[in-house]
Length: 414
Image (cartoon, rainbow, N blue to C red; front, side, top):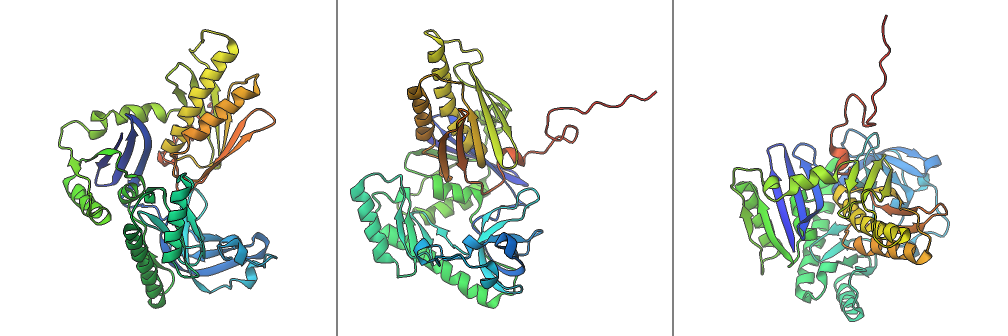
């Protein structure tokens, strides 16, 4: 059973997604600092750097956006040249170009953009120039994969591409067709606006955090949607009515005196799950350390002593840790390289068991990820796509220790 709990304030909106009473996703969207991922801009190339095979594009933000050559070439590999050209053969300073943000500006880096355009809908992802049809890997029945692929091929023209999403499974062709037409019109509107606007200019903004949550995470298994602001609940209801006209879910408005996150036990879970030291239900614990591009997770037995032998105790702790790490990666929206230092195991079969638990537990994660496997040092390595600043990084850094947790000794004066 899923629950979507949304807390609204004048300066921000906070969203919590619960599964079986446990917090699995949490996000904050600032009113004055909304993310740009998915938004389209008409930009102007301001610098082309052959040595990096990249260009910087002015999209009207504080920092110029970064455009790599692979995001300029055709999105279909079969249509790319066998020998990669120089970026200076593709882009010129002063050239105006339509780009889409794939990664928000983080730290000292500007946003990353692409010309591999995609517009996500409820049932499909529309790609106007990709020239292929794909079906979500989570659709496992081969007959259904064939049916969805056939629907996609019938809808698109030669240059268009689309991905049939997991939620499209068993949906009637008419619903998928309506989604396709709506997204195709959005792309047409973007192109028309680009002809009249002067760069840099916004051409299309991605949905708000709450709307994305409804579009991407709502399923028939979602038992409850609760918001604590009547006006925003009304607007969200209109969006859901447009998205699901046949079976529009009801949004409950919370009017209690206690904060909504306290009533649903969310604040307590946030306080626990965003610590550096996170206790596991069985008594073990995790130590979680992150940098801008790397996260290291150390697994420890802690209070759990087991009852059979050392190997059994270690495996039980590691399996439990793998299950919770998958949830925490999604909850914290951790991106980049992740290294997990599980407790050493003697048997190869136990290492396989732990990695399989991690893989199965990460399947509900909608963010692209890849489990690389065990390194020679016995560490488990995985990558998770980093699109936005992680939830944990959105907190303010301590102005005394600068996030290290250590205070610099003060030199004593005579």
